[in-house]
Amino acid sequence: MIELASRLNRIVESNTLRMAKLSRELQAQGKDVINLSLGEPDFQTPQHIKDAAKKAIDDGFTFYTPVVGYLDLRQAISEKFKRENGLDYPADQIVVSTGAKQSIINVLLSLLNAGDEVIIPTPFWVSYSEMVKLSEGVPVYVHSNVTQDYKPTVSQIEAAITPKTKAFIFSSPCNPTGSVFTKDELYSIAKMFEKYPNIYIISDEIYEHINFIGKHESIGQFDFIKDRVITINGMSKGFAMTGWRLGYIGAPKLIAQACEKLQGQFTSGANSIAQRAALAALQGSLEPTLEMTKAFHRRRDLVLGLMKEIEGFKLNIPGGAFYVFPDVSSYFGKSDGATVINNCEDLCMYILHNANVSIVGGDSFGAPECVRFSYATSDEKLVEAIKRIKEALSKLK
Image (tube, rainbow, N blue to C red; front, top):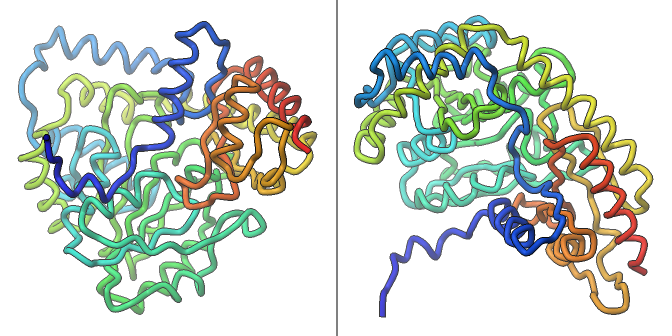
């Protein structure tokens, strides 16, 4: 009998990937399933970025890359941080990785010892908690709900701090809620953490450009806290480059060096062609990104308008990203005569099999009263999906 490593028992499968896999299986069986489970822009990578990748192949960028990334790319990231975010990360404090996901696990493995605690506001991106566990840390959850726009108060966060707290991790704009922290809110959080010099802040800003409320704000902009902020970003969301797998961090030098050491044993340097494409993205026009964001903004308004017609959905107004995260707890305990809805997972499976629409339960995001819809698909599919869902839910009494 094969005995697997016990570390696998600490983590669970990604629910977003599981639901996407299930929807693909049903599609293969001939079912007309609309997949609203994955967080992936449905836009093509802009042409100038593709052209840079093609040129990189012709120019011979086909060899191993430096573990931390090409110097000119790290310099471009450094300039981007200064220009767009007011952050000062020299090139030697930047590490390029195979996606922002690897960037985060690099940081957590570099920081955490067994038993160290990481504060995670809920709802949170599904992998935060599992990455903390994999790093032998302990996730400590700070709960918020739809009436708070899914943003915990500073006092709630501070109440979770213990002598074992090593880090605080959050995203803005947030996956799964679309909530965006304002500059004043970030300042208040930073001032609170100023009192706790041994706690690091990990700021996941991968949805930075998909922002509907104005300028993106980074918590690392405040001088009194910047030496303890690790900023995570990447190319996937803002440049429609999910398959290119290219992420990066700006971090205190010691942490950047630790991530380089780890990555040197895991994957070495990120893909050479993707790095040349990323350089073109960061130095080129943001017009395609802005156009994509306009489309997401329009879709958000479309989806919110349609969902307001579904009885029992409690909604916030997402300020960014491309998700809607309604509280659906009013359906718990209801039945269509054949199926009883006990929780969000039951509701997701009911919608999948009765409406042929794939969504994700909120329990994986630390909010079991909710479900997540991605609106990163066409207007026509969104209208049809919500029509089907409304019809299926009307049968629950």
